[in-house]
Length: 246
Image (tube, rainbow, N blue to C red; front, side, top):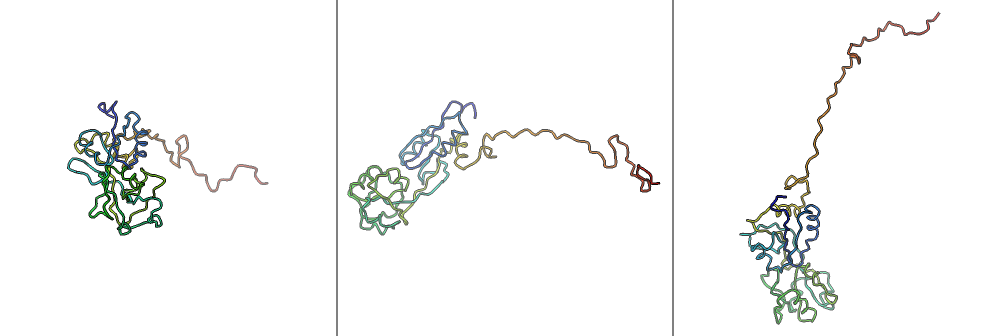
């Protein structure tokens, strides 16, 4: 850690549905002197926050503008349809877009999926947020198609969700301003990529243990005694000491 980093926090933004806990825990273990501050931001505002310097890095839903941001794609989420618990869809383990042809589908303004053609019938209104759309599903005003993490985030006992096989999917990635790739950002990238603390690509690898100089030992030649004199092999005709036979 450089002197410029001492005493400051690493600011990590994340969109709804993303769970950064596992990476934060590793950071806390490896970087105890640099606190990590989490910034929860609506999905549509994460990129602007990074551009304005409001966070050092952030988990975003792709695609994003890569002219000013560097991005590491991480994982793709399953898309699901959220329905009332007594809806016919719940009888199946998974459904297709064709199964929703006669249903009204809510389209919140913060939708994170990129649609070429939206499924079903348009609902009577466009809610501002996914949370508001979930409330409308519970009231029977329509169905909602979202990444599975958002269905879990807004879970209600009176609602169910099922995987939607042929719907577009949401991909999550780590993004940061390209011109602000600091050492702390590099440290967090290493954690997300799964590098160990001793990785050769890490910025502060653990020091290697000092090697002790090998102690040289003088090897004795098998033909020499401890005094250094050459040993004389016993004569084959020489009798062993002992009592002579009479």
